[in-house]
Image (cartoon, rainbow, N blue to C red; front, top):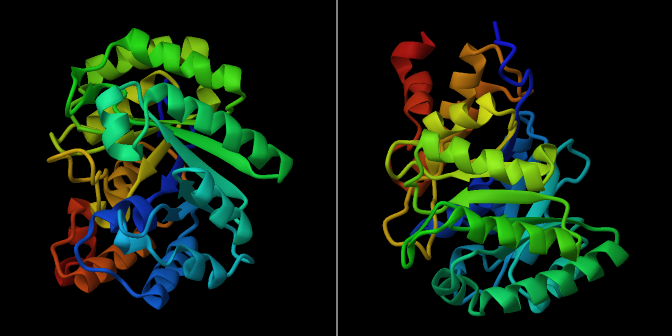
Length: 306
């Protein structure tokens, strides 16, 4: 039974087809990606981030974004979203009929230059321009803020740096944020202290958290977030992916691991854990490496299916 101090429902956004696959050395075919996305949709997700409209030479794993979107079955119940890096990426997404996009920024100048090749100020100008165009075209926009806790280049990021950036995004007219622990170094106490400040600035119901499990802290950090009322989290099936531009920060929080924890706490998600585990097992075999989800590995082991 869930405690009154935890949300009764948690919204999990699946980012494996985008943030997961972009870090893989093996490149799946367009057909394989479409099958993966449809299989995930059948698990009950509200939203799946399916690809990224970025320069193909930078992320060759996602060079077929148009073909993937053109092959999707939009009659399924999931929202299909995509990452957009710049104006050209926005135009590509618009031409494909994408209705839900995500943009990027960060309080770290060094990370901003390495990740999206501009300054933080320029990233905000870019976001404002694309956000205005998206509104005109009936699209929803979410902004990822990378390096919310720590940066691989500038190390500790202050709470005030992030707060100032959030306020700037609000002034631009952004209504949806995903706060990313890019290096995976955040710990629960730090998460609670910082998030408590951020939700004084930005509506709690419109913030999602994106944790990496590089230091084994992801589930503990989610639990800390639940205690302050946050209820939206980005995860990746089979724990695939991380960040191409953050050295050593491999390992998204595995969807299966979070689902198992929430299920044990009596918190609903509308997502079928066993179905996700089967998808994750198949994907891991397709990619040619071990399943990054401990729960997924156990649930698909023959001993546990008998």
